[in-house]
Image 1 (cartoon, rainbow over the protein chains, first blue to last red):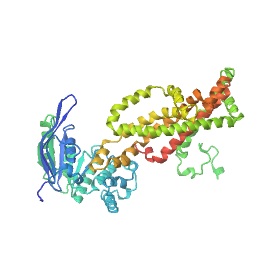
Image 2: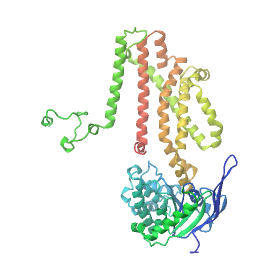
Image 3: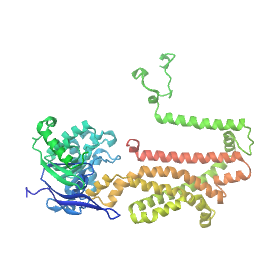
Image 4: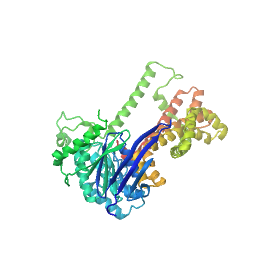
Length: 259
Length: 285
């Protein structure tokens, strides 16, 4: 049982049919697994179908080919194990941070005192324990995204899906959020599927980097990143790191997207 | 205390504010010592008074006869000559407008929500609704009089017909502006439809609904007046028509001013309510 992957993506394809009958193949024959507690980055050009892939795994979008299993079950039965972090934090401005974190539990009708305490613990974990009663407009973009991560973790999901969560942040905030995320991941021991279009970010964070080529979106490489944990900022300047980045860059370049 | 200040002391706008000694923050800008709201209010009052003064001056200088144009002063005089006459009629207009506004708001929000949540309704009815909206609601007033008689109801319904549409559109737009991510969040967490509506969508739409209400309230007052034009024996619309037949311009202008005051007060009340209910609006985006 332990060896069973948490997420298993088999031959997944996605074809949209437009109203005038044209078929638009967004994804084709995608195969990969995510092991328990693993951090997998997905990189690719914008429009390569990364987000669609994530939405299929989350059960929000139904794939037209192949199969996605979560712990051996169909995604639609496993929704409770999944949480998602979006590019924009989308916090509700009329709720304070703790109440924003609690939103998924209210949706699930499981907002108990214990879950509220866990919400506070999570805010503590991301260094926002003293901001529980503050509102999102009182926080910086990075802090808001940390609240959104807490909101995703509050339901004890096994799998955290992250769709370019730091894409809207400035470079410096982004770097510190990467360090933060690694720490959160280590402490909460979730499986993470992390979509980004920043290659260094993908390499630095990931145990593996899944490279998605475009038109149609397909997996062109699945690279194991053999860098030590916990990774530090200094790892970004190591030769090994540079080699991984160069490898991924060349792969994405080969697929013809960089002009 | 104040005599300790140097003679050529700094100018202050909000004179009587009991605040800390100026040497604590010597470079403080004027705008910070007086609340922005007060400054804006003062500017607005200055603007209104200025325009009224120009108007009075123009009437005086152009020597316009009283059957053509009167200045604001004679309108004010007229009002105070028989205030109960204007207030009683204003009260009637206010009742009609409020009843129409309340009904129009309730129906408008309901209709906007139905259009948003039931795609079939949207496809079938939205174009029709837009088409109906192009009819000037004023043109419907005679019909309402046929249907509802010469009393209170027909005016309230004219007011309702006018107040209705901005709320349909704004409710629909407000609901449509809910970010996709929030809907996805709700779906991932298996939130029921009702949960999603009450915890996210309706609250999200509230600012937009309030904007619609601000537009509708003055429209509703106008609707009531039009109703009174056509079939009134009371109300400010009737006052205006009566004054018109007697070439009594001071009374007409007094009625205009009362109407403006009514709309302004309602607009103000809705704004205050919006600020109370939706404090986050002032901060987010």
